[in-house]
Image 1: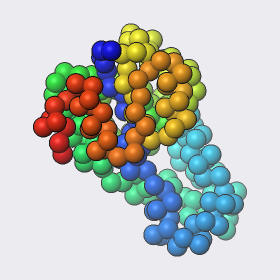
Image 2 (image 1 turned 180 degrees about the vertical axis):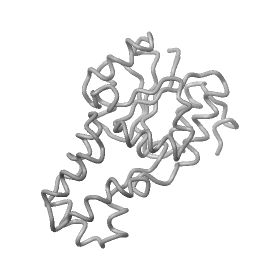
Image 3 (image 1 turned 60 degrees about the vertical axis):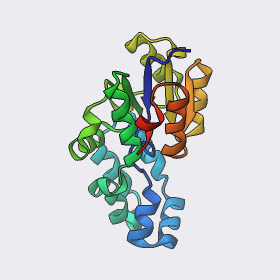
Image 4 (image 1 turned 90 degrees about the vertical axis):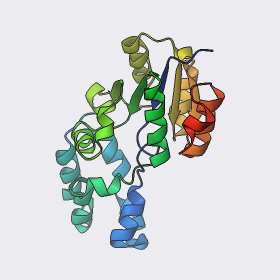
Length: 207
């Protein structure tokens, strides 16, 4: 079955996204656990991913929890420290695919302002053949509508799309539509999948 485009998630595929790790280092694991237990920080981030203003959502949430105000504001003020580092082998694979004229799309849950910030810091995020960013679309994975938008906008049938993401529910939603998928658990297995599909040679896929 011919793959005509490769579709990449960004967080934990191209760039590590581990907010808990950041907070463990900043405030200690015990306080981080207490804060994440008291405040739905990932739900807060989901609002940003659906297009609400980055700073407004974070600061509004922080005001509701004065005991954690300064820590919650870090989600905005020090966001680049949450979204780091780059996963070098994954970036190599993206570039290797594009060097062979294989289109690479982004399909990522990402806020409007935070994506602009990330693009400024990580210029390779400007290089997707088609970026599908939830904040711009006001749709997020695993909503079937965002996958349908990719199909319609790209003009590609589901069977011609190969999608990798680190979240099982996002993969399952794509599979339901007939996309080819790979649950990302590290760049080595992803490289092997690209080789098995005939998209890259072993030498091209090597970091």
